[in-house]
Amino acid sequence: MKRAKRLHALSEMLRRNGSRGCSAERLAREFSVSVRTVKRDLAALERSGAPIWSRPGPGGGYGLAIGASLPPVSLSPAQAVALMAAVSTASDAPYADLAASGIQKILDVLDPRTRARADELAGRVWVNSISPASRSIKSALEEAMADQRVVRIRYTTQDGTTTTRDVEPVLFASTNGQWYLVGWCRLRDAMRWFTVSRVERASVTKTACGEHGIHEVGEPPVNARPVRGRGD
Image (cartoon, rainbow, N blue to C red; front, side):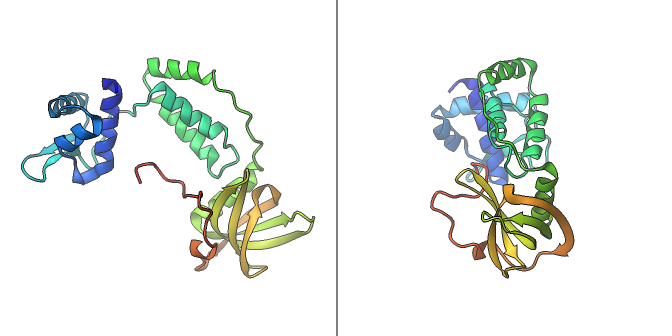
C-alpha cells in the first residue's frame, strides 16, 4: 500500500474506533508495517492538521479527538468515481437526489489534481440510468418514511385495480430490479409491498405511524441487508 493511501486508511481506522483508540502495535499489524513506521505516519497526520491524541501506558494508544474538526475529506480518483457510478446506476433508489448532492459536496472539496483525475476517469464509465418515479411521488414517500407519518397513495395493482390507501411506511426494499414501499396498509389492515413505480400519487398526512415495525415484514432473503457503512 502506498503511503498516501495508508495515511488515509489510518485516519479512517482511528475515526471508526472513536474514543477507544488503537495501539501502535495493532495499527502496525493492520497495515503490515513496523511500529516505527506507524508512529511516523501518525506524526505526519498530526502535522497535516488531524486532531490526533495519544495515551501512554497499558491500554493506551492513539485516536482522533471527539468533536474536533478534521481536514477536508480525502478520496482517491477511483473512490470518487465509485461514488458517482453508484448513484448514477441507482437513480430510482430512495434519497438518490440527496446522495447525489452529498457526493457533489465531497467532490467540491477534493484537491484540484484529484478532482481532474476523477473527472477524466468518470468519462470512462458509462451507465444506462433508470428513469426514476415522479420526483413529487418520491419526495412524499421519502418524507413519510423519514418522519414516520402516514402517506396517502393512489395505487394501481398489476391486474389494473386502482385504489387510494393510507399506508404506514416501514421500509424501502429493492429486489429483482424493483423498489418497493413496504408498510402497514390501513385499507387491508395488513402489511403490504407496494411497487414504487405503480404509485400514481402520494401525499404525506399529519398522522403519525403506529407501532408496526420491521419485525412484522417477515424474514428477509438470505442475501438482503440494511444499507450501512462497512465500518458498522
